[in-house]
Amino acid sequence: MMYDVVVIGAGLAGFSAALAASESGKKVIVVAQGMGNLYSASGYIDFLGYYPTTSSKPVLNPGKALEQLIVEKTDHPYARIGKENISRSFAAFIKASREMGLPYTGSLETNLLMPTAVGALVPTTLYPQSAEKDVVFSREIVVVGIKELVDFYPAYAAENLERQLGRKIRSVWVDLGLNVGRELNSYDLALTLEKPDIRNRLILKLKEADVQNKLVLIPAVLGVNRWQEVISEIEEKLQCQVLEIPTLPPSVMGYRLAQSFKLYLKKKGVEFIIGFPVSYVKCTDRRCEEVGIIANERVKKIKGYNYCLATGGILGEGLKVLPDEIKEQVFNLPIKKSKEQLLNDFFNSEGQPLSHAGVMVNDNLQPVNPQTQAVILTNVFVAGATLASYDPFVEKSGNGVALASGYKAGVLAAKGGFSDE
Ligand SMILES: Cc1cc2nc3c(=O)[nH]c(=O)nc-3n(C[C@H](O)[C@H](O)[C@H](O)COP(=O)(O)OP(=O)(O)OC[C@H]3O[C@@H](n4cnc5c(N)ncnc54)[C@H](O)[C@@H]3O)c2cc1C
Image 1 (cartoon, rainbow, N blue to C red):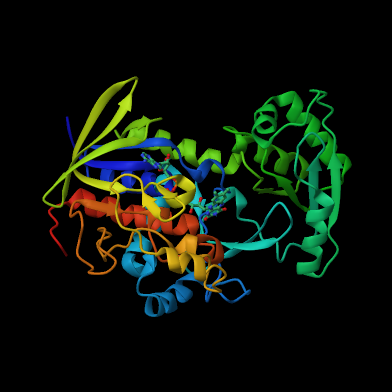
Image 2: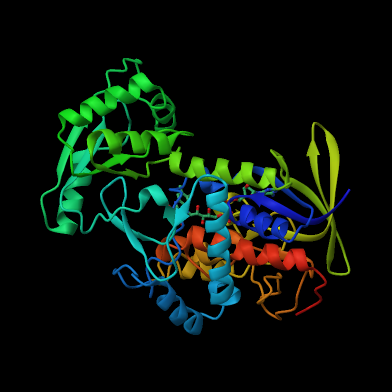
């Protein structure tokens, strides 16, 4: 079987590449060692939260900040992708999210400030429609903690919010009386709250906490699959607004996006092999001919015309940090940062050098030699956290880069027929 596009990696970058390629009617397969970081992350698409990176003020108009970044940082993935392609990736993702039953909203022109589990307000660009609530201008906010849930302290979050918003924020604990003999994580609790009797207990406790006409900030545990039903029921019965706050991993909001996206791609005909790293590649004349995995002691060859490399950088295990170097795991591509830069630049105000390390690409996202700029593999397109020259944490751009670069890589891989340019 010959695939048009082989995507290596099942994180947001890989999914976005698979989406773009399948939209062009191509035969696509996703091959991955494991599920990507979406399961640990908030489910928000943070596009550009802080720029310049030395600024502590959040970016409110990411489109405008992007224009400045493209001029100032020509190696940055966003400069390689271009504003028009970024807008296309947003439109494609929003359309797909609606079709997958998890509608997202937002635009390149506005960042919304969203509360974290510790009550920090952080900028994000695309978010589930159910999270479109205005924390900054809401008159009355109540932060709710659930006794059975680990790692969420409502008073602490409320205190931090008070400091930023300059007004009193109330916090309450609710005890669902589950008596399970242990604390639950977000995923366990979200599954439990899909049961009508437990959900009713929560509604009763919230009623006692007097949340009518208030904005209720509550950890994201309001259902794994039936969250829309749970949120609407609380809002309707208590005449309040509900905003879920992403929790520490396992993140239910990230899980919802990862599961819905994967199912959607499967329905579009995208095939998946998950659970095995790519263990060898065959390349000739600067083209990848085949990748292989070893499953149940058997070699499985996967052949494609074009490939997207979306292996998630250091955190996704696509890049391995060794004592003397950083190694790209699939094609052994050269990495942009040298050992000296990594050691001497450790506290660079532009961001962590390890985050900036990665595969250098040209404007077609093909991997290039960092010294000569020559294209190394003409039918491979790199996306997501494996790319060099940005810091997802300092910029707050992790899922933004994954979405936009994945989309462009998928479009180019579907088109094919590239040489060096
Ligand atoms: C805990 C946490 C929270 C975060 N929160 C946010 C957030 O709130 N907002 C935000 O915008 N960003 C956030 N980020 C950053 C963001 O998640 C990443 O920047 C983004 O998900 C990267 O996507 P990716 O597809 O490039 O990589 P990943 O999601 O890491 O996916 C990489 C994929 O490649 C596969 N892979 C790796 N090596 C191989 C191999 N050799 N063979 C086959 N497959 C391989 C992996 O198994 C995986 O499927 C967070 C990151 C972490 C770790």
